[in-house]
Length: 311
Image (cartoon, rainbow, N blue to C red; front, top):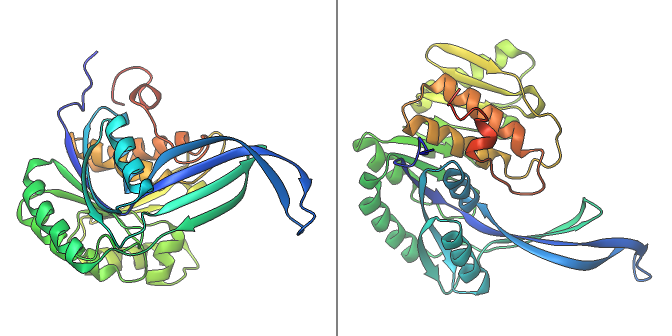
């Protein structure tokens, strides 16, 4: 059966990282400190951050290009190889002074024991070259996803949004930090509860939340704000008001990367002309599936649409 999204092309820009998993067994406590000793028996590497967004796009049958900055190091080359093996078109700028972001997770008996992060920030001149490449690529894609993990790869995000807006592109942003002015003019932003509260403050009622979210959406000139709410599902805020969908997770095993899946699936749906509310319902269903998997994971077309029809 032909994939309905195979002619959709999406550009992902942002902070890519390499997720490393070391699996083993922990049967004793270290004599050096009160911590478990994990005997590592298996290692696995996966695409993380913006790269995981791109991976979720191709898992649905659409085409993804990833524009990002990585280091001239072993993790950067491994990231490039993983992108290619997953069918993602890599547009990488290699920065010799940058350490590619790596998240190392040590897991024993299906429990995460430790996470160690390795990271640094790209140089300005590399980011300017990054922006030039972006200018050439935007017109070739149906939708633009800006995946902000706060690692410095989206220092020119205001210009990126403006360039895409001038070309009439759908722009989705996974935000980070407390300065949302930089996302002004995007089509949709997808904060979670913690991220939104850092910008608008805490809320005591659903009515207060709606008021705060609507005020932010209008101030930034957004078409929509999609709030992901974990066990409470999602709420979409548009000029038509608030629209909530309940969570569909059957079993929550690991929430890492769930936001990547949500924004990727929503972007694919919008690029295919599916209405926003329907796209949110489908993205919500995808999020419910992916949290039942270990680590950064994806949702396939058959998992999301068992009947083979988009519904």
